Length: 454
Ligand SMILES: Cc1cc2nc3c(=O)[nH]c(=O)nc-3n(C[C@H](O)[C@H](O)[C@H](O)COP(=O)(O)OP(=O)(O)OC[C@H]3O[C@@H](n4cnc5c(N)ncnc54)[C@H](O)[C@@H]3O)c2cc1C
Image (cartoon, rainbow, N blue to C red; front, side, top):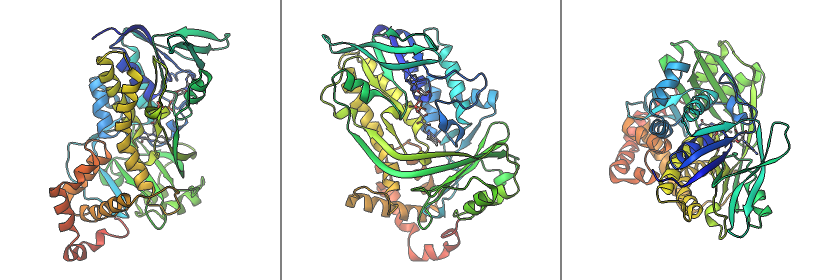
């Protein structure tokens, strides 16, 4: 590959930063990842990634891209840490619009392991590359720039308790997550910050892990419930390493699940299936309850800025963070890393403009999926274009038909797993199956699958 410079810096060593560094490692002599936290010696949660204690699953697309960057990654997580590979359409029960989608075999393979395990394996693989290194306990505090060339030339950072120092680089990538300071850092250099788009959803996660036996859930690897009227409560129960289940539940706009046994069970009983409730009622807990509050879907429109410094990029959740219920964030970061690789193949000229434009096309799809579904909730505030009403009506019909048609269910899950774009659900063969599955005679015959899910 073409060498584009001596040194690239990535700020943040979470999933986004690690993936960005992998893409850069093909084009820069040395890549340094600067991380504020200490890396945990075992794959345990850490301060800078508080979501690491909560349910994470890697969608089929994310698992495939990680394999592309680090061949053997998925099997390593399974063999060394006890992660589980499963057929997303067959091994997991999906409930949306209060109905259960039909299971069926597919080529959608997802990886189940706790978030710290996914990150730990990725970090070890990245740092095994000869030209990549990481500096822990390194808090980046701002950018340094060369006003004459309108370029970022490095960062100001504090390593452990030492005085602030500058670290120079030919390219700096901000992968510091949703709380990114890029807007302020850019303003300090005389640039406009990006416009924000926010859709407030007030999602709560109440999470706990439990002992797993192979016979639980009839051998399935999980249940995912996307909330719908009347309660709009979400739930997820996913198998993880060390014979454990991770279970999260929570609703919109402050409708959080309680952090005590009686209250949590009562909350689980309001979900459209009793399966999680019945499991928890007699399960052995392995951890305390943990709470997480997720305020809003948040997208920063870097692609719309007229002026942006050379040699600087923003990446991952720092560009866009989505309602986590749809499990998209790590996969979107993986797709962005592929895009970064493609952009770098064309050289470093005009890199930021090319990268942000390409990323905005990637982000459009998961953003529309997440926000489009969140806007079904009548109290979530945002304009609802007529097209969205039609799409949500059609997806509702698709769900009804997919309770008996695993081909339809798999097509829908391919979209959710970011394998195919949403318009694929409007192709004539799919529309015909949706129509066929919604004929009155078919719906009457399938009534037990509708309403309260099995
Ligand atoms: C509750 C919850 C559940 C989720 N579930 C899923 C799921 O099932 N599937 C999925 O794909 N995604 C999920 N996500 C999203 C996923 O966690 C993120 O998309 C993913 O972590 C990528 O984020 P990131 O690396 O861009 O940022 P982050 O994970 O936020 O990491 C930012 C990193 O930057 C470091 N940092 C911050 N500031 C500085 C600084 N100044 N100097 C140096 N380092 C700094 C932090 O310590 C941290 O390591 C979930 C998110 C939440 C909140």
